[in-house]
Amino acid sequence: MERSTIQVLAKRGKSQRQIAKELGHSRATIARALTEPVDRQPAKRHRASQVDPYRPQIEQWVRDGLSIVRMLELVRADPERPYTGGRSVFNDMVRRIRLAIVRVDADVSVRFEGLPAEYLQVDWGEIRRFPFTQQAPATRYFLACRLKYSRWSWVRWTTDMRQETLLRGLVDCLGALGWVPWVLVFDNMRTVTSGRDARNQPIWTPALLQLAGEFGFHPLACDPGAGNQKGSVESLVKWVKGNLLPGRSFADDPDLSGQTTSWTIQANTRPSAATGEPPLARLPQEAAKGGLLPPTAHDFGLLEHGRVAADALVAVAGNRYSVPVAHVGAPVTVRLHRDRVRIWRDTLCLADHPRAPDGAQQRVVDVTHFAALFPVKPRAQVMLYREALLGLGGCAPAFLSELSRRCRARLAPEILGLYALYEQCGAAALLVALERADAAGSYSADAVAALLSAGATPALAGPVVGVEAPAQHEIDRLLSVYEAWVQIDEVPLGSGMAVEVPA
Image (cartoon, rainbow, N blue to C red; front, top):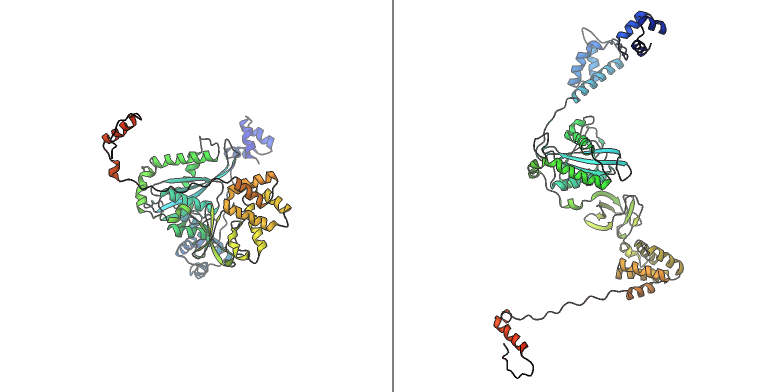
């Protein structure tokens, strides 16, 4: 029976008798339905269990840490009321009681304040299809950090939540502070922890442990299911979403970043509702207790481990970087900087390359790393030199392609000659000469050399030869001495007048 139908018919003014006749029910049924809620839920049936009499005792045993096996032994040995039911029924009851106790204990929130410089709380926020006004909607993330004591906050918008994005954001946040808090508190994000061990302790990722070791902070993860442990960082994410975004429009990513910076500056200079003081007013107390930034903070390199392959290349972030051939097969340490890749073997820096875009599948090669092979593999030298010249971009690929087609028989000396010009004149001058040679249809190293010579800038003048300076007493003269020299200039030539020349 639909109670909602009875309620609707009654609201239309029909009597209980008419409703009963129309729906085929008795008047008593209609009258009862009109007094009951429309969405009344049926009462749950509770079946008595043989374990119910032992429930209070089981709750105490759970809190005391007794095992299910021991509990079952005790209830079966009860002299007054021995348990005669099955093991599975008893086990299910114990599990439900244990889960209820854990849930109740977990729901009790204990609020506390941190000491100066003690806690920096970290979390990610996400806005899907961000409503930009001058660029297409797209998902944007923000990294939010807050000091627990002063409530100083820092926010950065990103296009992803990769591990490197997180760690570089943390480095920049600490750089903005100028010091290092004692503890960084994280949620159980995959970029910082890969799970829990047998003792329910977080398994930190190697990259985070390396960052913590170099900067001198202790990482701390919230217990699973107890997100309130992060305290005010949860409020920070809601605060950003609820205060920065409403009532504002953002043209594009630079505008979003600029308005966020202005907004956080204002937030850090006005009194906090939690402390009654501006965060910046409390910040000096924290700075006095915080740790020192390491020397690598301005150019931090993420740590990775690798091995030199048989072709003297090391795979890093979807690209391959060269090292000297003498280190083939050796284990190496890679430092991923923002725009550089440095490869180390113990304390020796084997290579320092410009960083290619991650995942570009590029070979980044320094030809000097293979110089030891050139006497026995001259063709390898030619191919490596040509690859280096192709990497100059501009008109170099077109010129080298035509040169390789036309001058196949003498390709080796041509490439070696062009590479020598590159080392001698630099990339900019060589590209200009290659463009002029390509326009003239002259595909040879000699033609390029002639163009470089014709367009060479004149040599700088040599150093100025120093002239012995007069003594100071020869410079400091009376004004009357200079007036005498003026009188000499005023005497007409051939006048016969004698003028005494000052010493």
